[in-house]
Image (cartoon, rainbow, N blue to C red; front, side):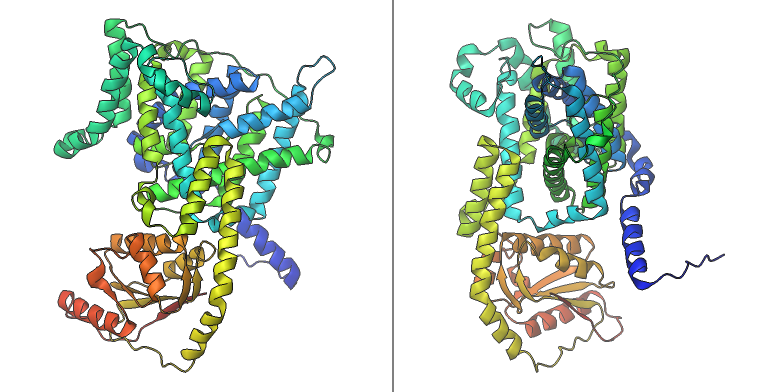
Length: 583
């Protein structure tokens, strides 16, 4: 039976469709239905993440002034709601450094007459931030994250990676953890004066396992399903239990049911700005991590659903007296490295933390911190963006500058400042380039105005023809155009109409080509001005492997593709073609 929708006038229909599409986008069913597809590895990943995130959650809770339990409950709530309703399949949510600092600043600003923080106000503001996040997700504001330049994302990734590595150096050597990046860096020259040999007896074997295990798995296929992180965790616990070494362990886990905090609903407008500041920080922190997840998985997250999930997580975290939550880069990368591929891993992590809080804490109290340091040290190495580090010296000057500034500011300041600085640099670079290329672009359009369409003899060959500047603001439309292409065997990326390209545009072509090749398609690149081709060569998009499949003009690319196809498939029927254009 077909149910017809009631007739409504055009303005109402547009609003209705917009709201319907927004609600459809935040529907968690897509996350739920894929959970059974990777159960074994997701459970193992959830166990590892729970053990790793527990000390961090405790530290964030203590650092905020609310106590360890506040950090643990934030991790529990973040894992469930951020996982089920989140926009990234491998995203792990919980308390983070930036969100902890933001809430602490709010607590300082709102105090009782006794000088103690007004917790009711703090949790009310956090509750309102959750509502704001949910509203922003329905308005689809979150998808603006796709306009972030790759140099900004890469600088952020490398900055977070360096932070994780530096903060694990002290516990790796058995020294009390540093309170800041500055303290961690200052302590490095004194490591061999103050190290704990017992801690190194645990940390070094665990790190070796993490580094060498992938090579062992390649040689012995039967071990392929055993994640290195779990093996390192068991090794660290075993060494400590057998030799009774004098090392720092996870220690006592706080237990108990949280106190319920009812928000002051009538004070929404009074607390709107501090709530908006938390919401803004959560969006930037979470969505940049989702882009990192996209880079390592090759998939695309849903920014609006991610924002909605974080809104729910922060709303419920406030009710239970928890910290603000955001998608954690460390947790997300750890999840992927240990085999997690669906939101089930995040849910398993939360259930394990919940069990620990409700009385099973003694099961993990003896895990050595040196073992966790080794695992997180490897996670920090995995977060670093080697794709850009390997060709850093060949980057265009402005991309090199943006990357370096974001990296440094992420280390010495915070995420929001780094994001703002990087976007400002990228914006001015775009304005400069677009002003130079505008007239040239118009001339190119005039030149090809009367050009006949290119005829291709085989419907299995498709041409993707970007038109205009290919920069961080235009790569998403390019991807959308190609996703709608019908089935084909050869993709020709024709750059003749590209007037300017930045690092984001170059890597967009690189990632699009890799995706097409993973689908079994041959990729050929053609055309482009000398400066465009030079940038693609610098960042290895056109490298030694690919040079035989790059052609200076589209006609040669088509001829080569036809011959290549005829060599592979003789019986293709000859039909018309389709030329895709993005603008």
